[in-house]
Length: 176
Image (cartoon, helix red, strand yellow):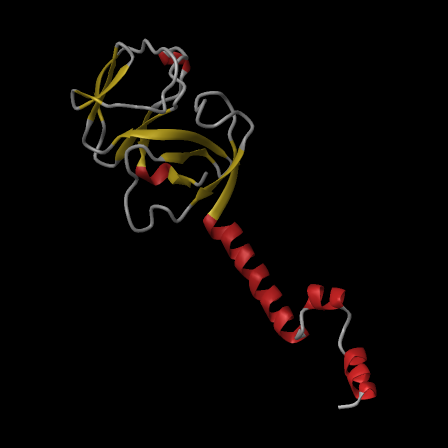
């Protein structure tokens, strides 16, 4: 090859910035872009639900006004587990609670001197920070229910939204 032929070959190739934006094969790049957009739309519509954490009941685990995502497919093949932080649907698609599951179906839950008791046994909760003085008589959790509560136990028991949640109201598990 002569120098002129090499220079002609170089002039036929697109500029470096065109290769970065489009790639060497524009058709393949276009197909990848279409597939990526479709995948993102499906994930947004059917899998991930963005939520904003409002209130202080989940502090210090989640701070107020934090945006997070709920994985709606998390419980497709297994049931929610103790310790999972879940989103619970209240009214419509946009009003939800963000709480931690502490008791499973069929268990008994109680609070004594700020300690959580499951079936009479103390449950260690390393995520609970600060003093807690909650007192609550034992309460049975139904066969299709989970007992949920926030991590901020410094609040008064009756100021804190907690209790039994039906499995059908649990939308999914928080991702982050």
